Image (cartoon, rainbow, N blue to C red):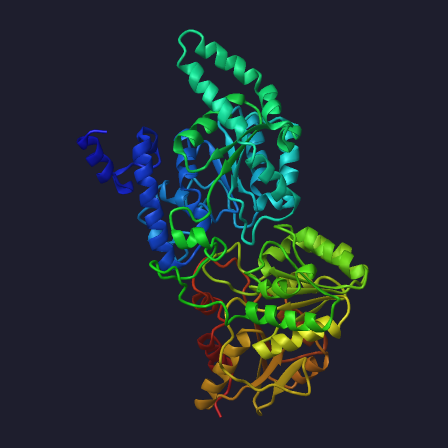
Length: 630
């Protein structure tokens, strides 16, 4: 490259391009320059905003290749899980807005069609992309649309059962415009586990096939007259060549897909070559791409799990601003480990969230009773049921938002048989910047609909430990202990040492405030603030939130106003159940239910609690509106 071209490459920046159209005109050297700039933007922005770093750093070249080979938005790019779409957003007109990612009023950390026509669908949970792509590809076929549906899925998400249902149907249907791209970084959040991980490893170790084929094609292209016809013959004999080198057909071919790969996910030329080849087959194609999670930022490459989803961090050291040691997750993991030291029946299960749920402590001391089943919540619940049927005590630690996928198993495999399975529901309630797909506001209505279920919602670490012990040793059937993301408030509030189910504080008021979990801290703060202004309130804090003793309803009957604050969807929630019982008991006063009854977009937890009227300030407003000054 001469000096002038070097200067042009050095000066080229994303802001100079019309995106994504101008990407196709770039040289590979310019692509390398753009990739470096993108990684710099990702690290700088996520260090301030938090978000998913390692997965995005690993897919920069792949995203560039997809936009250079395909024609978005006519070709549909479907991202799975969706949190690796940051580069896609940078390349589709959201460069200037990118500094607002995951911020209130800013762009989402996940694909969102309302935000851009380049986002084919909403995607915040894993393993959905192939089924979605199958539907899109079939709709295109029916309408005579020649474009492609491209599902980009990670090896961790490929452990989900829905992904295999999509593969099975996509291959059987022989959709000519369906392409599945496997982003194989050998690293889901807690590491790829199980037979699939071993199978993919065996394919990765069979690169001789790809190297042989590419070298032969390059040689033939340089052979005048003979080259092009010979390449066509080579493509027809692809299966024979593959079996000679790899000794077997791949599982994906047996499901009806043309298999291409594995290829280097950081080699721009190889990526684009294999994607163009995929387009030529006019059949379901499975493209296997190898990437490095955290590529280009040493702390993320060294600790991809730590940098999967991060809060703010220092760029130079990679150290996060807030340690995860002081959190409900860590307290849960440590207490479960202590309990397991005393009872060998206790087993711990996670769905690829060992570190996120605090189970690393349990795994370190009891590896023989620790199970990471991959991104497979349905399997996790039924696996737990199997353990319980044989006298084990399984504890499944899972984020509230992901528990939603296992509803049928909770009913059919656990509850109907009365099996004792404990759910440790992490990230219950509002989680903040991850937005609508990740807020944990639906586990309570889901679980209250299942007969025989017991639910606890502790408001501090001490209650968490107490609830976990009771769930394991004192209760039967399906039992859930739900707790929020982050750490507990240092605020102290009255607790009834003789009654672990609830605490009732009677203050001679005509207003009763009811709540549970994290929001009770806001209620207690508002109670003390309003008292200083002469507004007295009585308090009822639920710890065992379902089923609750009907004596609590009787206590509430003596008040003129009862206000229930609930960090959950109220439809089917505890506040709705409590209100229904009040009505049955003939309550003649005013009943107010305050809950999170909508899909909450990304913002800080504090901002969302204020929006849902669940903050201390909001509680005060209700007290001033409905209370009487003494």
